Amino acid sequence: MAIFLDTSKIKEIQKYHKMGIIRGVTTNPTIMFKDGITGGLGGIKKQTIKIAQLIAPYPVSVEVTTNDPQDMVKQAREFAKWAENVVVKITIHGPNGELDNMGVIHDLETKYDVRVNVTAMMSAQQCLLAAMAGASYISLFGGRVNNMGYNVCDEIVKLRQVLDLQDLDAKIIVASTREILNVIEWLEAGAHIVTVLPNLLEGMLVHPYSKETVRMFLDDAVKL
Ligand code: G3P
Image (cartoon, rainbow, N blue to C red; front, side, top):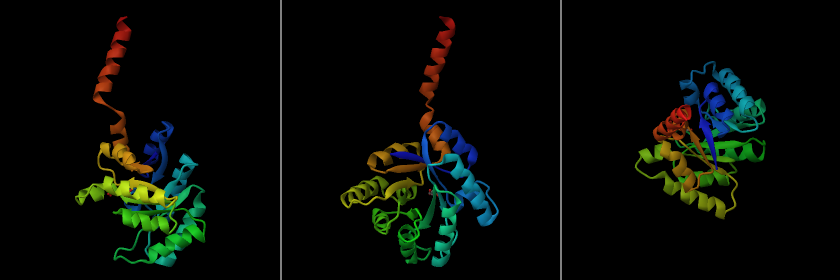
């Protein structure tokens, strides 16, 4: 069981890495854009290398910026050279349901020795096929599934059972966290990893009643 941080902000990664809480980092183009990264592939490379060095040997996932099959392979092989702990994110299929991505995932893992995190998945079925294609990590977007009106915990339970039954090595990452409760409930359901927004991690850690209790100890320590 592990917690990854879903951000590309160095300060946030440093903060939680120092605490010994996180075991990896995940990013995507939307996160990097929101975090103010610019400069196209050069900017992605610079930021990824910084993160990779900071958290090594833990993995950092970085997503390709194209859906052209040949370019995906080319970019992924290039990204994998940036650092040993780089994992490349490939979406389960293209924006119009293009199916080439599965072959790309399979080739990267089996022919080119690149670790792949298959992303943007909304069901246990998609995740199972990605695991069968050889993906090291399979990312299920929990918050988005819940927002469609389904409980992602049902998908996590099914998926974990099937992976274990079939001896598939892929690690389930549940992403798209929305609430503090998601982390523990998704891990309990069978996720190997939950990738969490930095502010949610702080919310998990700090409790108002703990604050009050600590204040009481410190006040009484002065008095005694
Ligand atoms: O890691 C995937 C995640 O960043 C997507 O999250 O909040 O856009 O559904 P969200």
